[in-house]
Image 1 (cartoon, chains in turn cyan, yellow):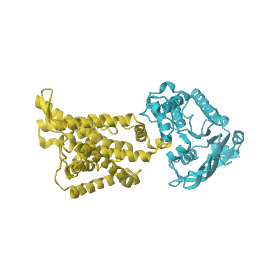
Image 2: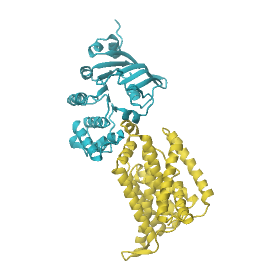
Image 3: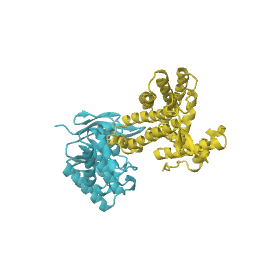
Image 4: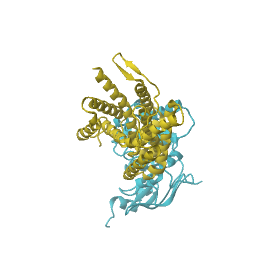
Length: 244
Length: 287
């Protein structure tokens, strides 16, 4: 059985800066994969390639063995890859209900009537804990609520894979716990494959099945959490080379 | 007093038609970041279409109007597919292309329709006594009600329908809406068609009142831009209020000051808005 998402030799440059150099990776169905690395390592660029915001200069991307390298973002989304952003981007002038509905409209599937879909929106908003915020405009939400909304919108597209870009950034410790609970529920109840970038090390080490480490555009290590923390190259990437 | 009320009514009637035309520009700017300089030409073409359909081909005027609007919708979609789509990502190119297109279309109209003003036949004749105060032409009253109907339809389409939600999502964050599965290319294409159709709608409504001429198009584009800036970019409500304000001020100004200065009033307002409230009456300050 092949991997759910597979990337081969992904390379992407912006002007003179090479953001990714020949990165290979794969996600298996049902896995939670963490993606870590210092600032500028190319983590978000990798997400941008997978979600179709940018296309790689060279290399190939496969989803369920289908070549998705040069598909447009909405085509990739409709295949089943959804994404949230490090800096939240809900549609600010629309209500929570409408925001989530856009994700359902985006699926472009013909089955199910309007009422069913409205019920689906309500269920999703309850699921992420925004059940009492249906008619609130997104711009009036707090940061954690915006993140929850973005999650509901991503889930509305019925993804098989969820790409989460630093969902915990900017949250206080108690909010981090709430967000982690939500991710855990998504994983256990919805059985989704999750690929996430995180700087909160404790969280990502504990919750991930496997971790990929990027540094300066290259994959320097991949493996289980305990292998990562003891790896010399990873420590160097984060803390600088030791003189000894 | 009655005179004043009549000028005011004129202003309101022209105002709602202004609003329709301006919403056409505003939609395209808001969703696609494209300024359509060929807006006035589409309006003129629609006027000529309705004239030729009804006067030359014998189509009933009431059918000629929607038919002309539909043709303009198709022309709009064709423009987007062939000329505008390749320019996405660089607003300067689309600006130049629509500007060139406006000159080309204006001269095409001169060649095809000739330089003479034309007007399609009136749908109704006679006048109605308004509240016992003054008589007002039935054609203008009908134009007013058709315009209100179109405005309500647009508001419903944008605010209530699911297609409207996609439109608003794309106008707020094009990349993000694509990432949640909205086909932004299709939304762009349909909204350009819709914007063009609104220019056409304004054209066919006005044509029986003020005959269309090929050279009248630039004034119509400028008028729409003034309303959009006045109301605030991307605000439908702003277009309606801006359109009404411009219509009323132009008509009262023309009546009490001088008809010579009719077009100046709009630009004086435009300059004042740009100086004191550059984000328009209902627009939002850029962050």
